[in-house]
Picture 1 (spheres, rainbow, N blue to C red):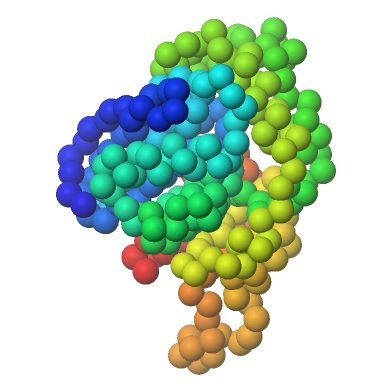
Picture 2: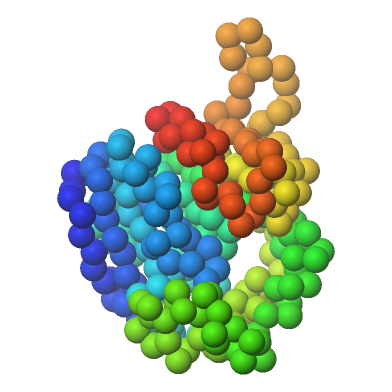
Amino acid sequence: MTTGSRSGFVPVEGTDVHYEVSGGGPPALLVHGAFGSTRQFAGLLPAVTRTHTAIRVDLQGHGRTADRDEPFSYERFADDCAAVLDHLGAGPAAVVGYSMGGGTALQLAFGHPRLVARLAVFSAPFRHDGWHADVLANFRATGSHQWPAVKESPLYRDHAEVAPRPEDFPALLDKLGGLLGHHEYDWTDQVGALELPVLIALGDGDSLSPGHAAEMFALLGGGQRDGGLEGEGLSRSRLAVLPRTTHYDLLASPLLERVLVGFLAG
Protein backbone atom coordinates (compact mmCIF):
# COMPACT_ATOMS: atom_id res chain seq x y z
CA MET A 1 0.00 0.00 0.00
CA THR A 2 1.52 3.32 -1.08
CA THR A 3 0.14 6.62 0.14
CA GLY A 4 1.01 10.03 1.48
CA SER A 5 -0.61 11.65 4.49
CA ARG A 6 -4.37 12.04 4.51
CA SER A 7 -7.40 11.72 6.72
CA GLY A 8 -11.09 11.13 6.36
CA PHE A 9 -14.26 9.59 7.73
CA VAL A 10 -16.07 6.31 7.06
CA PRO A 11 -19.81 6.17 7.88
CA VAL A 12 -20.50 3.09 10.01
CA GLU A 13 -23.77 2.30 11.78
CA GLY A 14 -24.73 5.74 13.04
CA THR A 15 -21.41 7.55 13.27
CA ASP A 16 -18.53 8.66 11.06
CA VAL A 17 -15.31 6.90 12.04
CA HIS A 18 -12.29 9.16 11.69
CA TYR A 19 -8.99 7.83 10.36
CA GLU A 20 -5.54 9.16 9.46
CA VAL A 21 -3.08 7.60 7.03
CA SER A 22 0.64 8.30 6.69
CA GLY A 23 3.76 6.65 5.32
CA GLY A 24 4.03 3.96 2.67
CA GLY A 25 4.44 0.23 2.39
CA PRO A 26 2.38 -2.60 3.90
CA PRO A 27 -0.51 -1.41 6.08
CA ALA A 28 -0.32 -1.23 9.88
CA LEU A 29 -3.45 -0.32 11.83
CA LEU A 30 -2.82 1.44 15.17
CA VAL A 31 -5.66 1.38 17.74
CA HIS A 32 -5.55 3.69 20.77
CA GLY A 33 -6.68 3.13 24.35
CA ALA A 34 -9.39 4.64 26.55
CA PHE A 35 -9.59 8.45 26.43
CA GLY A 36 -7.08 8.35 23.57
CA SER A 37 -7.17 9.25 19.91
CA THR A 38 -4.98 8.99 16.81
CA ARG A 39 -2.52 11.27 18.63
CA GLN A 40 -1.69 8.56 21.18
CA PHE A 41 0.69 6.89 18.72
CA ALA A 42 2.55 10.07 17.76
CA GLY A 43 5.76 8.85 19.38
CA LEU A 44 5.80 5.51 17.56
CA LEU A 45 4.58 6.90 14.23
CA PRO A 46 8.00 7.83 12.75
CA ALA A 47 9.34 4.32 13.37
CA VAL A 48 6.24 2.63 11.92
CA THR A 49 6.09 4.82 8.81
CA ARG A 50 9.69 4.09 7.88
CA THR A 51 8.50 0.74 6.57
CA HIS A 52 4.68 0.72 6.71
CA THR A 53 1.59 2.72 5.91
CA ALA A 54 0.26 3.68 9.33
CA ILE A 55 -3.54 3.80 9.60
CA ARG A 56 -4.83 5.31 12.85
CA VAL A 57 -8.48 5.38 13.88
CA ASP A 58 -10.49 7.28 16.47
CA LEU A 59 -12.76 4.78 18.18
CA GLN A 60 -16.42 5.52 18.90
CA GLY A 61 -16.77 8.57 21.17
CA HIS A 62 -13.03 9.31 21.00
CA GLY A 63 -11.02 11.86 19.06
CA ARG A 64 -12.90 13.10 16.01
CA THR A 65 -15.36 10.17 15.95
CA ALA A 66 -18.74 11.06 17.45
CA ASP A 67 -20.48 8.69 19.85
CA ARG A 68 -23.44 6.46 19.03
CA ASP A 69 -26.56 5.86 21.06
CA GLU A 70 -25.36 2.45 22.21
CA PRO A 71 -22.89 1.09 24.79
CA PHE A 72 -19.24 0.61 23.97
CA SER A 73 -18.14 -2.90 23.04
CA TYR A 74 -14.91 -4.39 21.81
CA GLU A 75 -16.83 -6.10 19.03
CA ARG A 76 -18.30 -2.83 17.75
CA PHE A 77 -14.92 -1.11 17.95
CA ALA A 78 -13.45 -3.97 15.91
CA ASP A 79 -16.23 -3.74 13.33
CA ASP A 80 -15.51 -0.02 12.95
CA CYS A 81 -11.82 -0.74 12.40
CA ALA A 82 -12.73 -3.38 9.83
CA ALA A 83 -14.88 -0.84 7.98
CA VAL A 84 -11.94 1.57 7.79
CA LEU A 85 -9.60 -1.12 6.48
CA ASP A 86 -12.18 -2.19 3.89
CA HIS A 87 -12.75 1.41 2.85
CA LEU A 88 -9.03 1.88 2.30
CA GLY A 89 -8.53 -1.54 0.72
CA ALA A 90 -5.82 -2.06 3.30
CA GLY A 91 -6.16 -5.63 4.50
CA PRO A 92 -4.61 -7.85 5.58
CA ALA A 93 -2.75 -5.48 7.89
CA ALA A 94 -0.49 -5.64 10.88
CA VAL A 95 -2.77 -4.58 13.75
CA VAL A 96 -1.35 -2.87 16.83
CA GLY A 97 -3.58 -2.13 19.82
CA TYR A 98 -2.81 -0.48 23.15
CA SER A 99 -4.87 -1.12 26.33
CA MET A 100 -8.55 -0.87 25.29
CA GLY A 101 -7.21 -0.85 21.74
CA GLY A 102 -5.49 -4.15 22.49
CA GLY A 103 -8.85 -5.73 23.28
CA THR A 104 -10.18 -4.19 20.08
CA ALA A 105 -7.25 -5.59 18.09
CA LEU A 106 -7.93 -9.07 19.48
CA GLN A 107 -11.60 -8.83 18.53
CA LEU A 108 -10.60 -7.70 15.04
CA ALA A 109 -8.46 -10.83 14.69
CA PHE A 110 -11.27 -13.04 16.05
CA GLY A 111 -14.08 -11.54 13.99
CA HIS A 112 -12.32 -10.36 10.83
CA PRO A 113 -9.32 -12.67 10.35
CA ARG A 114 -9.06 -11.86 6.64
CA LEU A 115 -8.00 -8.33 7.59
CA VAL A 116 -5.25 -9.21 10.06
CA ALA A 117 -1.81 -10.43 8.99
CA ARG A 118 -0.12 -10.14 12.37
CA LEU A 119 -1.19 -8.79 15.74
CA ALA A 120 0.52 -6.72 18.44
CA VAL A 121 -1.27 -6.45 21.80
CA PHE A 122 0.15 -3.87 24.20
CA SER A 123 -0.91 -3.69 27.86
CA ALA A 124 -4.17 -5.58 27.43
CA PRO A 125 -5.47 -8.82 29.01
CA PHE A 126 -7.31 -11.66 27.30
CA ARG A 127 -9.56 -12.13 30.34
CA HIS A 128 -11.35 -9.38 32.25
CA ASP A 129 -9.82 -10.56 35.52
CA GLY A 130 -6.36 -10.18 33.98
CA TRP A 131 -6.39 -6.54 35.11
CA HIS A 132 -4.97 -6.02 38.60
CA ALA A 133 -7.69 -5.79 41.28
CA ASP A 134 -7.00 -2.12 42.03
CA VAL A 135 -7.20 -1.28 38.32
CA LEU A 136 -10.57 -3.03 38.05
CA ALA A 137 -11.78 -1.11 41.09
CA ASN A 138 -10.83 2.17 39.39
CA PHE A 139 -12.60 1.10 36.19
CA ARG A 140 -15.76 0.24 38.14
CA ALA A 141 -15.66 3.66 39.80
CA THR A 142 -15.45 5.47 36.45
CA GLY A 143 -18.59 7.38 35.50
CA SER A 144 -20.24 10.73 34.89
CA HIS A 145 -20.23 11.49 38.63
CA GLN A 146 -16.54 12.32 38.07
CA TRP A 147 -17.34 15.07 35.60
CA PRO A 148 -17.04 18.00 38.07
CA ALA A 149 -13.58 16.77 39.06
CA VAL A 150 -12.25 16.25 35.51
CA LYS A 151 -13.78 19.10 33.53
CA GLU A 152 -10.73 21.32 34.17
CA SER A 153 -8.22 18.49 33.67
CA PRO A 154 -5.83 17.94 30.73
CA LEU A 155 -7.76 14.72 30.04
CA TYR A 156 -10.87 16.67 29.14
CA ARG A 157 -9.01 19.55 27.46
CA ASP A 158 -7.25 17.13 25.11
CA HIS A 159 -10.59 15.52 24.30
CA ALA A 160 -12.39 18.81 23.72
CA GLU A 161 -9.72 20.05 21.29
CA VAL A 162 -10.86 17.63 18.60
CA ALA A 163 -14.17 16.05 19.66
CA PRO A 164 -17.18 16.89 17.48
CA ARG A 165 -19.37 17.01 20.62
CA PRO A 166 -17.25 17.79 23.71
CA GLU A 167 -20.43 17.98 25.77
CA ASP A 168 -20.69 14.17 25.48
CA PHE A 169 -17.72 13.67 27.82
CA PRO A 170 -19.84 12.67 30.86
CA ALA A 171 -21.43 9.94 28.70
CA LEU A 172 -17.94 8.85 27.66
CA LEU A 173 -17.08 8.35 31.33
CA ASP A 174 -20.19 6.22 31.86
CA LYS A 175 -19.56 4.10 28.79
CA LEU A 176 -15.90 3.50 29.59
CA GLY A 177 -16.85 2.53 33.13
CA GLY A 178 -19.35 0.07 31.71
CA LEU A 179 -16.96 -1.50 29.22
CA LEU A 180 -13.79 -1.61 31.30
CA GLY A 181 -15.30 -2.13 34.73
CA HIS A 182 -18.37 -4.26 34.24
CA HIS A 183 -18.11 -6.13 30.94
CA GLU A 184 -16.68 -9.52 31.88
CA TYR A 185 -15.03 -11.63 29.19
CA ASP A 186 -12.74 -14.61 28.74
CA TRP A 187 -11.16 -15.01 25.30
CA THR A 188 -9.04 -18.04 26.15
CA ASP A 189 -10.46 -20.25 23.41
CA GLN A 190 -10.30 -17.55 20.75
CA VAL A 191 -6.67 -16.70 21.57
CA GLY A 192 -5.72 -20.36 21.46
CA ALA A 193 -7.28 -20.68 18.00
CA LEU A 194 -5.33 -17.77 16.46
CA GLU A 195 -3.19 -18.79 13.50
CA LEU A 196 -1.02 -15.72 13.05
CA PRO A 197 2.05 -14.21 14.71
CA VAL A 198 1.23 -12.26 17.87
CA LEU A 199 3.41 -9.84 19.84
CA ILE A 200 2.44 -9.39 23.48
CA ALA A 201 4.13 -6.43 25.16
CA LEU A 202 3.68 -4.82 28.56
CA GLY A 203 5.64 -3.16 31.34
CA ASP A 204 6.79 -4.94 34.47
CA GLY A 205 4.75 -2.35 36.38
CA ASP A 206 1.75 -2.46 34.07
CA SER A 207 -1.98 -2.63 34.85
CA LEU A 208 -1.86 -6.39 34.31
CA SER A 209 0.78 -8.84 35.47
CA PRO A 210 3.60 -10.40 33.45
CA GLY A 211 2.14 -13.71 34.61
CA HIS A 212 -1.11 -13.04 32.79
CA ALA A 213 0.81 -12.08 29.65
CA ALA A 214 2.80 -15.31 29.96
CA GLU A 215 -0.51 -17.23 30.07
CA MET A 216 -1.51 -15.63 26.78
CA PHE A 217 1.90 -16.40 25.29
CA ALA A 218 1.49 -20.04 26.30
CA LEU A 219 -1.92 -20.21 24.62
CA LEU A 220 -0.14 -19.18 21.42
CA GLY A 221 2.44 -21.94 21.81
CA GLY A 222 5.13 -19.75 23.31
CA GLY A 223 7.48 -20.74 26.09
CA GLN A 224 6.67 -24.43 25.85
CA ARG A 225 10.15 -25.72 24.96
CA ASP A 226 13.76 -24.73 24.64
CA GLY A 227 14.29 -22.38 21.71
CA GLY A 228 17.27 -24.33 20.39
CA LEU A 229 20.70 -23.26 19.19
CA GLU A 230 19.31 -22.21 15.81
CA GLY A 231 15.99 -20.90 17.13
CA GLU A 232 14.17 -23.95 15.82
CA GLY A 233 12.10 -24.20 18.99
CA LEU A 234 10.95 -20.59 19.02
CA SER A 235 7.28 -19.70 18.73
CA ARG A 236 6.29 -17.39 15.89
CA SER A 237 4.66 -15.25 18.58
CA ARG A 238 6.67 -13.06 20.96
CA LEU A 239 6.50 -11.86 24.55
CA ALA A 240 8.18 -8.65 25.71
CA VAL A 241 8.17 -7.47 29.33
CA LEU A 242 9.80 -4.04 29.52
CA PRO A 243 11.70 -3.23 32.74
CA ARG A 244 10.79 -0.24 34.91
CA THR A 245 7.81 0.49 32.65
CA THR A 246 4.18 1.19 33.55
CA HIS A 247 0.90 1.27 31.67
CA TYR A 248 1.25 5.03 31.35
CA ASP A 249 4.72 5.33 29.83
CA LEU A 250 4.83 2.14 27.75
CA LEU A 251 4.19 3.84 24.41
CA ALA A 252 7.10 6.24 25.03
CA SER A 253 9.59 3.42 25.66
CA PRO A 254 12.49 3.14 23.18
CA LEU A 255 12.52 -0.58 23.99
CA LEU A 256 8.92 -0.92 22.81
CA GLU A 257 9.81 0.82 19.56
CA ARG A 258 12.63 -1.65 18.95
CA VAL A 259 10.42 -4.63 19.75
CA LEU A 260 7.62 -3.39 17.50
CA VAL A 261 9.90 -2.58 14.58
CA GLY A 262 11.42 -6.05 14.77
CA PHE A 263 8.00 -7.67 14.88
CA LEU A 264 6.67 -5.67 11.93
CA ALA A 265 9.74 -6.71 9.94
CA GLY A 266 8.77 -10.35 10.48
